[in-house]
Length: 221
Image (cartoon, rainbow, N blue to C red):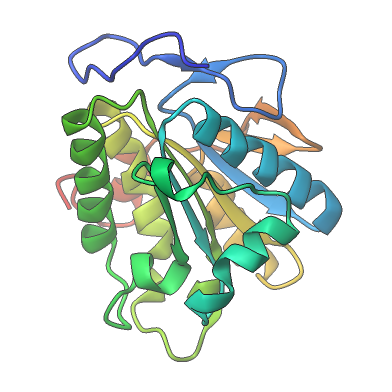
């Protein structure tokens, strides 16, 4: 359970929450990269993480790399995620990843940041304790999606967003699908990593002010 009942963006620190898969709690504005090659481990981590948010009645979003929304609930149950009954689903958002990251078939960093701001506002309006999301990022490899070159920029800007709009995020990257160069860039924009089922500080992390400037990108997006 969370240690506070609502978010306060003016607070110096974020609420401390139970991640579900670690004994140690972490701040709600924790941005994690999960580069995995063990499917069994991934399922256990994301199931515990997601179910913990549902149990705590947080605003929970799971964005699965599926084309068919009709198969979504069956897929989630197959990896160990237990959606609440219909009476308690107002704080749960399960949907195909492409409908969130690129609803019109085109991805932009600015558009996705805006959608996460909207989730945060919805959370506050309903007095839910936190926003907890996780996305399967393989949608970015689809030849039918344009704008995926802004993916790393988005991940960097997400760190800026979390300074004013705390939310918890695990970004799932399949090491068998993404190339090494892309994964190294992904590492550089996540302050925390999930490694063997544990959350650890990322030694490769570059703060967004430095990363965006280094790539000639404005801080204000």
